Picture (cartoon, rainbow, N blue to C red):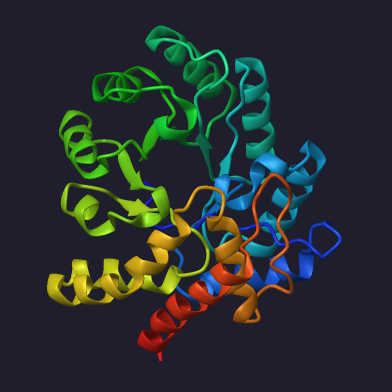
Length: 295
């Protein structure tokens, strides 16, 4: 069962927009050194929506070789078409993914039976676990607790749900009660990590620039030191809030990683937005607050 901190790996680009593989290698090692329990690939924080099919395949092959079994890889393989999602999922499995994170079809927006068919078709195409990504703010596709619990019962490879349907903690609690076999993960940059952990979550999938904070907070919670967990997390919350601004979070995370020397450039691909000079100054203050806590 998946468990722990699975940062969504940003995609480093050279200034000319090409994928920067040396920076990607440094980032992978950086995340593992900070204690990441696994890695999320091609999610929104990865700018997966800007990557071409050949780039995704090449990146997954490269990352799988680099990680070499040191941590599970969860690849995002959702698509607007069921056959395409099944094919993408099978390819990701063949290229080294340990599990799949799958958005529902967000163009036609199927009903409950249509979603059962979609995830069932993907399950038939693969043998690795499927994480259903419940993200209605982005997809406008609601997936109530009863439907997700039914997926867990009736679709063989549905083993996990990433709950990004606010308020997340109550939904995680209800889903944990209805389908205790599911590994439940929080998203939305981990802003409700502690509440979600208290309701039965197995982990969190934030961006790539504060992995050590999430690892340390979960360790503190496991030891029963809730007060210290809250103290540390409260220091990071202004940064997490800043990064939740629509369209700006990826740029912020990349600037933080570039400031640490992990990646060479904070370049993003359109339509992802870049921070302006005022926002960069604001971000630097928040970054230093978190960095001071680590030292």
